[in-house]
Image: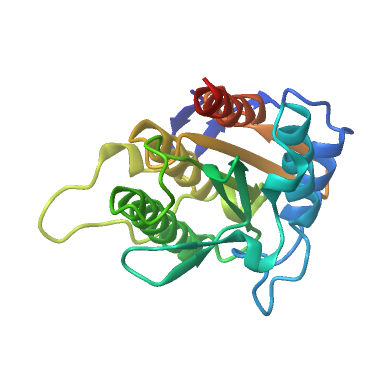
Length: 238
């Protein structure tokens, strides 16, 4: 994992080259306004190319083209604490849910987004896990792989130490002390994976102004993200 210390993220370059398709689309996504669900009123379509890359790679790895969805209502699943949840991609195999994937990009308002993205990601995953336990996601006994993609704009505002991180009654986790917003997004994604809220997590920091995109953690790379989902496909077919 990348080191996190006093607002500095020590990083490793992405497995793909800076001029590759993934890196270009990550840079483009980081240059747009903050968005969550791609089908929202203000979301536009800036994350569609990322969804298309993931879809193509899942199909190339063995998923049937007719069972990888990245459009509108075909990406809706029932929830337990709410009626439904719209995901950005769904991957099925013979009607069994193999993976549900969420895409997020963050370009500004890093303080608000750090908390909002944490609440959303934790809530969506817990709802999906509970929906599976309550037999709302089909008849398969194999839980789906939850996928999470976050693309964050690497810029001076995201590299500053977050303000107002304090607790009135108990001390905060020391990892958050002196952490920049990039550090906080890295901590979030790493902990989502470590606690198995999401089993497949891809985190990218991108600076479209400089044409740079990189993966800050060897545990949160695109290759591992895809591998975890493809591994689940093998389990379904075993």
